[in-house]
Length: 215
Picture 1 (cartoon, rainbow, N blue to C red):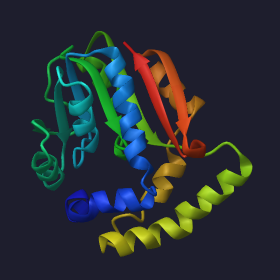
Picture 2 (tube, rainbow, N blue to C red):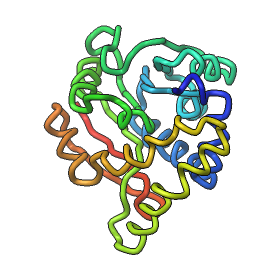
Picture 3 (cartoon, rainbow, N blue to C red):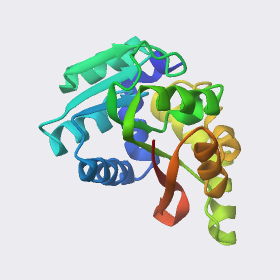
């Protein structure tokens, strides 16, 4: 699916988020920069937008992007992401304690077993290493909650089909967002996967949340 939509993936992201995805990734890169890591792994890197933001923000660090989609990796390479690995997030071909920080933007939600993926992330993090998860969430305010669900169920599938010309590719998206744990539920999932000092910061009315944690 991701190979099929790769050519129009970035356009879809920018239009469907009304351009807010630039801010979400920039804020994520700022948070990671505060940790001053020497080596960062960006999982489900896709077309490489977060990896690029990290490269620009933390010029001294080695940023490694990992994804299982060859078409997405080709896009990331063309944009200038320097270090890329083709692999599955759930089975990382990486040594234990090999990264100071791991980021995953809008990718954990697509993994079959979220807890298993988080445990694998913890395995490759150094002692004292950090995790950042950026993903969609559901607004807590009733009116925003109602409007956002309406957007996910009615507007998003139609708009994404028009933009990507792949009707089936984005049909799963709304349901995946509604079923994905957010807020306290996600914090608890991260904590039970072996992390500590878990925090959550919501943006854009609560439709996106950045979670951070430490090993």
